Length: 220
Image (cartoon, rainbow, N blue to C red; front, side, top):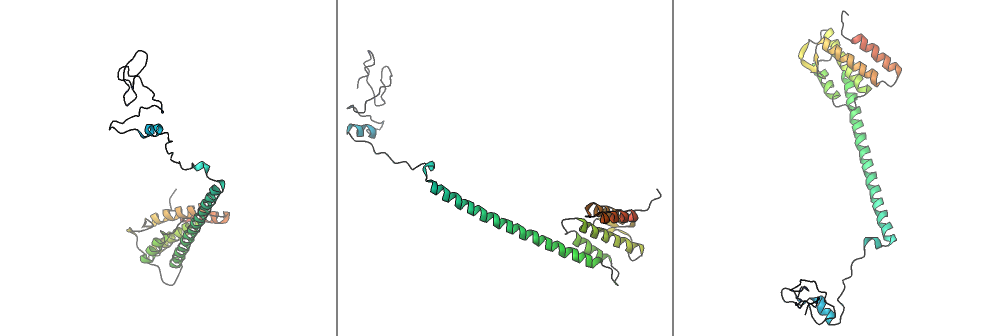
C-alpha cells in the first residue's frame, strides 16, 4: 500500500507506518489490505472486517452497582445479624470472665479474713506469709483490700510487741521487713489508702485516726 502523504511515494508496512516519511497511516476497515503480525499471522480484527462479519464481543459481568436493591438489602441484613450475634457472644463471654474474677477475689478475701481472725492459736510467721501470698492475688485493690493489708501488718506488729515473733529483716510481708518501725510505716500508709478509698466520711475519719495512732513514734 502506498503512502500518498503529499509527494511521498513510500510504502506502508504492516505497522501502518510509512517507511520513508514515517507517517502513521490509518487503514480503512473495508480496505483489501490486511494487517499482518511480525510472525506473519493475519490480524483477526482486520480479517473479520474483510469477511464482512462482526467480531464477537465478550459480555462483561454486571458492575456491582447494578445489583438489585433487594439483593443489597438481604446482604446487609445478613451481615448485621451476624455482627449482632458476635457482639452478644462477646459480651456474654466478658460477663462470665468478670464474674469468675469476682468469685476468685471473694474467695481470696474470705481466706485472708479467716487467717487473720483472732483465735486461741497464736499466728506464726507461716500463717502471716500465707495471708500475704493470698492478698497478692486480690484485684482490684480498693478499700476492702487495703483494710486487709493494714490488718496483716498490724497483726505482725502486735506479735512483735508481745514477743511471739522476733524481729527479722530477712523475713518480709508484702515487701515489708519484720521490724517494728518498718511495719508501722507500712501500716500507716495502708490505713491512709483506706481513707482514700472509703465510701463514707465515718470510714475515712476512722482510718485517718488509726493511721495517726499506728504511725512511728518520734520525739518531734
